Image (cartoon, rainbow, N blue to C red; front, side, top):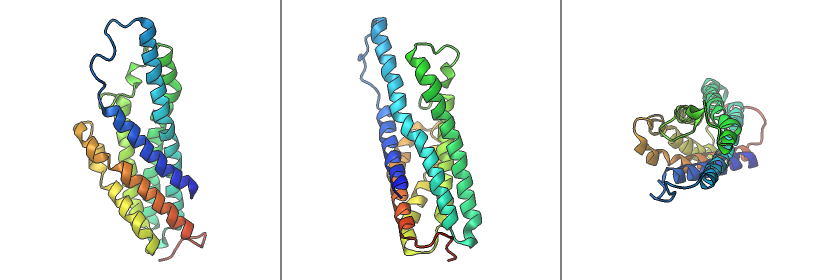
Length: 219
């Protein structure tokens, strides 16, 4: 239960960090004639920003799959196909985003700090301008699909009403996430993910905490 609540907190933190990253820096902050030492400090701060932003995101992939696996186990037998689809989409999400974040944390970040980005510039994680950002959006599109199918797989019990609402709300954000490479302004709609997803995780944790049986609910 605590793991699932923490997942929601991580998700909210990720969105706050991400939105902060969309705010352009004031012009003139870095002088054009800055010396190499100052430029290296800037690069080091960028590498640190990658670590701060993407480490929680890396953990989110693992915990989301765990949550969907638990949901699959507790779904009614008549909805196992739907919950299995939700788990499959969650696995696709985790595979894509952990690939992106692992590459950033273990390759791009260290090479950036060392000032050696030769041959790997295309791996930079640049919003709306990079290959890996497009892969990241695809991953979160799969997350939306997973929550949409997961909402349909929840048991018909009172404690499932709140998580169903917030999972559906997360699922319908799919177009705003998937189409951002074409329409970057959709980020302001997709930002609702920072509210709906943590809320869904919290209420799913509460639902699991109230279940008294370790097997699927046939309702």
